[in-house]
Amino acid sequence: MRYDERVTEQILRQGTFVSYTFQAGGYDSLVELRAKREQERLTPAEAARRDALETYYEAKLGIFERLLRDGMRPRLAISSDAGPFDCEFGRISYGLELAVQGGMSALQAIEGMTAVAAEACGVGHLTGSLAAG
Image (tube, rainbow, N blue to C red; front, side):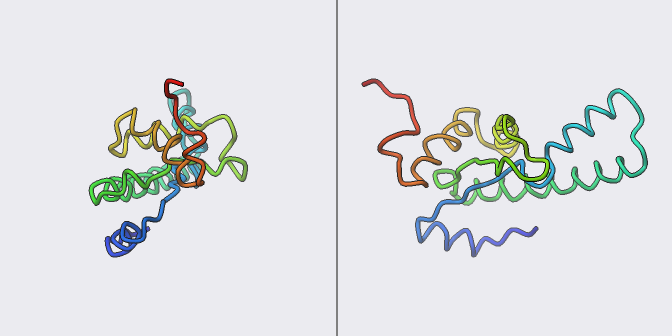
């Protein structure tokens, strides 16, 4: 993965949204391997997988930080791609946690998962936020 600010500039100019599927790519496995390492020794294959995932998520966080710095926050929907491989349903909180690690406040991460996502889907006028009335 490599960040390209020219792509970000084009996305911003066109008003496009980015659905940042933070936990896709093995985060569920990384969490499990981190927990296992706390309790017992990882096999060499498990340790290599954990190291590779740590590197992958450091890069993903770095790209996210750049997107925020370059003004993408109002266009960043935080999503999960839940279902395939090891990206299970019921773990949407991982995306929130990673978004905060990547530089969003907790409220901004929640908005990215609700209001921004609803706006990206064209239903922001119907759903995506809690409001009086």
